[in-house]
Structures are given as C-alpha cells and as structure tokens.
Length: 51
Image (cartoon, rainbow, N blue to C red; front, side, top):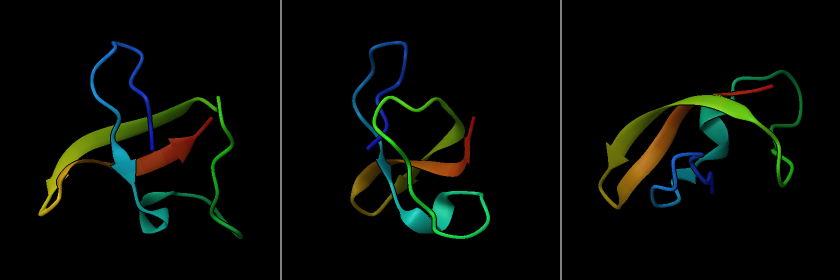
C-alpha cells in the first residue's frame, strides 16, 4: 500500500504497476511518484515510479 503525503486513505498498489527493472518491490518509507486510479476493489495507485 501507498500512504499519500496529503493524509488521504492508503492506496493499493499491484506489483505490475511498479515501473522498474528486475524484482519489483517497494521498501517501507520509500518515496514514489504515482497516478491515482480506481479498480473494481476501490482506489489504487498506477504507474508507480520509485524515487
């Protein structure tokens, strides 16, 4: 999950949305750029780019 810096609700992020080579994972506290989208299960993060 991604916690937006503006205090909004956490967003689910699927590993297929992480834009990086190799093993796609995010570390706790890591900054990312992302777009907010909606899936059938609710709000989610798309096009996630680790910083």
